[in-house]
Amino acid sequence: MKTYSVYDPEFRAYGKVLEGYDTAELLDAMRAIPLPAEGTAYEPGIASLEACGIFAQLRDGAYGGMPLQIGMCWGHNTKLNCLEYHRDSEINIGTEPFILLLAKEEDFVDGKLDTAKVKAFVAPAGAVVEVYATSLHYAPCHVDAAAGFRVAVGLPLGTNTDKPALTPRNAEDKLLWARNKWLIAHAESSEAAQGAYVGLVGENIDIAK
Figure 1 (cartoon, rainbow, N blue to C red):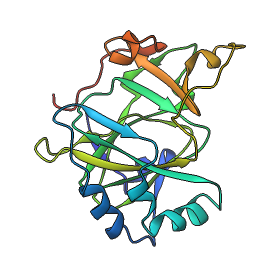
Figure 2: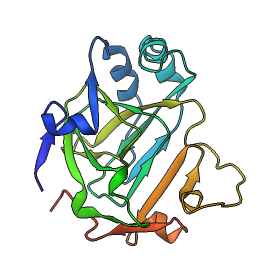
Figure 3: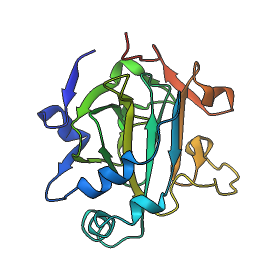
Figure 4: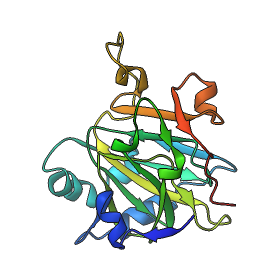
């Protein structure tokens, strides 16, 4: 699997790198949070990250004044497992280089997405990466197994919190996994075992291979 950079032309359909932000304070706050021994952790909003000056800058600039949360996904990961999407862009900022496995929403056809459509993009530490709403994504992958990854996640306030009560009216409603989070799982994933919709077909990509 070829790995592109978020600065390569191939990334333009999936997102962009936002310039002009000083991420140093945020990165220090992220590094103060210990890595889990194995697997990954995620919190939608973390007070120590939202206390950093970049929080207001991203809220008022990148999100145009909309209510924002900054949390983090961190740990160790090499697998695709699932893809998700929101109704808006997501901001990712890593303390270390990290890899995003991405697909396009239009590749999800008749309830299925072939994982052969997934592309890998590496982001350098400290870059402010916007992932478009139409880009399917999930947990980042580490570049260095020893270092793992810490990736700040900026999203509209309330995203990835408790799922609203909903009686499905259409096929998409069956994908709703949390607030503002639609999830498509691979059969091999733990999310599938928990009842997530299985729509990824083909290999469960593992960048360790």
